[in-house]
Amino acid sequence: MDRWLWAVRLTKTRSDAAAACRGGHVRVNDRPAKPATTVSPGDEVRARVGPTTRIVEVVRVIEKRVGAPDAATCFIDRTPPPPPVALLPVARRDRGAGRPTKRERRVLDKFRQS
Image 1: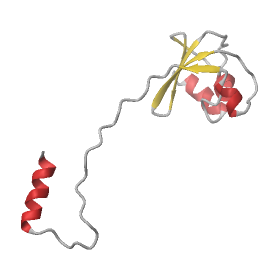
Image 2 (image 1 turned 180 degrees about the vertical axis):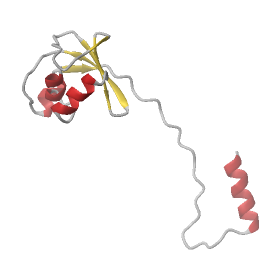
Image 3 (image 1 turned 90 degrees about the horizontal axis):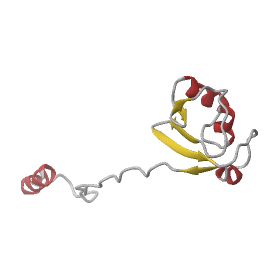
């Protein structure tokens, strides 16, 4: 398991992959996976990598690390897209415009409260 995670570039190093397995951050077919767990085509792997949980389906098992385009063909990424981040408009003043007047300050404060 740790070798496959490293070979398909889900983790940066093999020791990171082994640590994730030992820490309980990797599951194969909804079962906790140890570093020595074997994977086969068709298995679903859930690996928490950083702040996100990656859900991938094994297509091909490889033992050695290969190039990124080849590694991408070894799994199907089933990770749901992250929720959209709402962008709020930011009140900005032109550079060099000086301090806002009392009226402009009231307008800015009213804008920030709503």
